[in-house]
Length: 198
Ligand code: ADP
Ligand code: 5GP
Image (cartoon, rainbow, N blue to C red; front, side, top):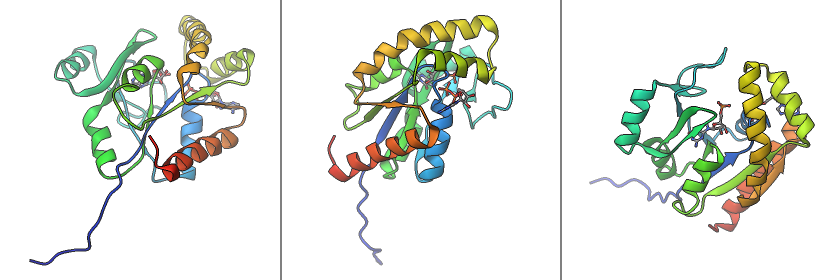
């Protein structure tokens, strides 16, 4: 039998990124993945409708409520939660595959999902993205212009309440500038990897 070189794979890291709606999570994540293309992203399942420009399977896997609940029933989600009136969930299989391959993978999930994962996954890195101010957060939500007035108000009210949840995270990063915030997150992940601590 021929043997190849011995390969030891270090398990990857789970990176949990949360923050209020409109703070810039998608924007910063995009920058982060440009800076570090090896970083995987866990595409969530959701029952919310796609926004203009959102591609099924890229932004989210868009599914109906019955299918979502059937997946939850079968235990296919690492975590799931109802957020702003819609269901969102993380595929356990996809996350596990990435971690087993030694890849770092980012979950962009809400505070309920993060609270579920915290006691269950050793060594996960919890990062909370903050706006420079509440006024700037409102400006970004309005500027994004993807929600109707009622949905935007709901998101804004929830967002202000959510800011306090940042206290439970290992790291709080202010998204004052996209590039700066992405670099700060990258530094956090690299230093945790280098230390090899959980
Ligand atoms: P989230 O994913 O947290 O809901 P988005 O990434 O969709 O937020 O960003 C919301 C809006 O704020 C978008 O219009 C985006 O271009 C803008 N934005 C994101 N980060 C910044 C920043 N650092 N400075 C100014 N505008 C930003
Ligand atoms: P949006 O509809 O703006 O894309 O996301 C709304 C909220 O749902 C955000 O706080 C986002 O982090 C959260 N979210 C997205 N995917 C998931 C998921 O798989 N699980 C949980 N718990 N929250 C998610």
